Length: 331
Ligand code: SF4
Image (tube, rainbow, N blue to C red; front, side, top):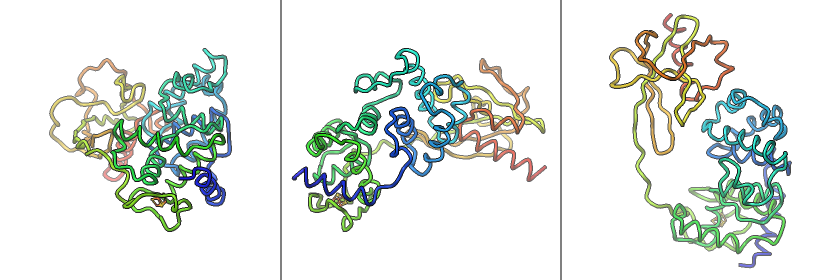
């Protein structure tokens, strides 16, 4: 494959068809980091309003570093996976405190920030510093696997190494920002998972995929586990009792108090949500505070008005909305 011709075709297409996303209008490494953290496991459309709100409230590392955790988590509310917000906050504190506000530029410096893996470090280098480095997100992996008709599962170390090697063959000597953005955009708009739009593809003459719809290959899936969580609805007509989690998943967030043991008898509302490799059914049982077993975690009753100002995990916020709707419907 002639990489110069490939890169030219790709860039020309991107200049005409690439989307005008807010984080593509900046080279500020902090803003790029915020967008990349938000985009993990979340769609572009969902991230845009969060990104704009966040950058308005915390326009710089210094402003984020100075903020309290509850405000940070509250602004993140609805995006899920709160660990990303905590890591972003911790990174800002580290840059502002330990490194006197100087944002790291090299790979090792970026990887030293909390929660920054290979993908995010390379993305910041490409988008903020214009370096031509391999940025391996799902779109890029799919496009490269198809361009080279790769038969090794891309979710294995060996498969990913092959994708990285092929991508490095394609990278230009400089101007990584545009090249990487264009490759990602091709994956998002044309070379989509499932059925790609090969007829519209600007680089189809370079593509070796014989059955692109079957690529990329993946290793057999680990089955999804089903699990039930029980929570108490303690409501005095004006306020709902919440418990602040100290568990790793939702540390610091306020949720409905968990109930231990077997599902209790009596009416319950339920909803489902997904976390990594698990489908969880959350069952909510009306209880009085005296029914709850003692807990080391703090409990507090919040009026409906105050619920908007505290960080609550999304499934529990949905549960609260559902229970309040029940109260309104049935008196
Ligand atoms: S020709 Fe089809 S499979 Fe190949 S890169 Fe383009 S869209 Fe993807």
